[in-house]
Length: 165
Image 1 (tube, rainbow, N blue to C red):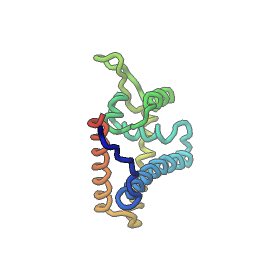
Image 2 (image 1 turned 90 degrees about the vertical axis):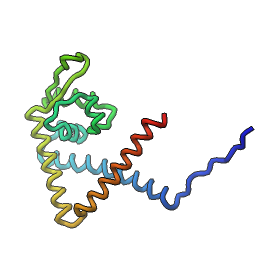
Image 3 (image 1 turned 90 degrees about the horizontal axis):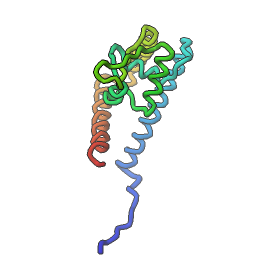
Image 4 (image 1 turned 120 degrees about the vertical axis):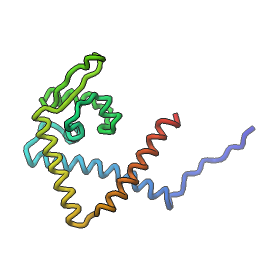
């Protein structure tokens, strides 16, 4: 007979509270990024695609990729990547072509229209980077610290998915 230890929630103090705050902040920052892209697109008159699709175009860039590669390279985390790719092809932002070796796989790349959207997003990000630096919001060292910490979190979460189940 084993002894049952009652479940006790981790303390809401200290590290656990900081971890929950960090999770909430990452979530809010992602939603805010999508809102910033949406506002920029409304300003320049790009209304037929959404911010998630715009980020997908930005991340594909000059590459030619499959939907699976988008997810494995970390460019896109959504479960509806196929839907967004199909929409972007229909709207003329991407070309698609079946792979010669594996006919089930489709490779996509940006059209001129898609590259124009990528350029809008890149310009937005460049303006933001310059503004953040010039206003002293964060400097190069601080950005390196944040990026390093987020990469370690990404590795930890990836390991949890790969090795726990």
